[in-house]
Image (cartoon, rainbow, N blue to C red):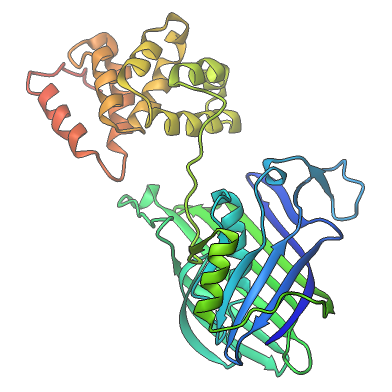
Length: 390
């Protein structure tokens, strides 16, 4: 069995026009270690170790030429053990990671392993990796360089929803290209460069939107031939032994959605109390107001009826009630609807503005909640108020 180690410099950076700039690197000289076991010509087991990954952020205060500076993060606290990749004819059906590692670090490893999935002949194929199920095209520029382009990627964690109202719909354009360069006898990668670009804009005006740029670079450092315990037997036998000995979990390349908990606010009431100044009428249309709106919509969808009612009844929220009803209308759960209906009287002319704000927001939802629709009709069986003529 052939067994040797290859060291790569690993640098990953993500640039978001709306969210700032971050860079992920592996420290200790930015070296990632890849050990290779070859039970046969077509079958390979890769042992990868992302050593001491660290987070860097883009800042004007950074002394380095690239503008990135180290920033502490939970990334350094995560359990992070070596993981294994089962490489068969250029495809990776599974990876094997420590079963106690958090989803965040496992998803990073899925992305890293996806870079190693490559074919050596020109052509098209369907592949599954961290981007989802993609249509892939391989084009070789010479015997040492191959370009891989991924298109039409569909991920179960990122459902693609369209708004039936064209004016409110969003357009998402993505490009994913990976360039591989091998050594002269194709034994290992010299460099791997992955570039992804995702642009989201409103359908009525492409000047309004956001974009995310992601680049991953792996550069060959050195090869070592060290003495390690030799693994013998079939691939299945080796993998089963590794799973048992190192407490590994078998995972696919598809990323898994994380359950992100809001640590800053335990309730809708507390979040509104924190963001009240950003919801004032004078700040509508500003970045701060938009960020507050997005945060509260997400939280309202998880809140219970009593928490929302408490928020609407609070005297200190009287001046931001129109904005609160906008938020509740954009969060069409049964709890938000029932809470709103306890405070709104559809027959009270003094509440015309609030009723209009809530119902407009509710009507603009692309995917109405059936329970909310049914309960709304129950509320409107009695005669509604008469709106004054324009």
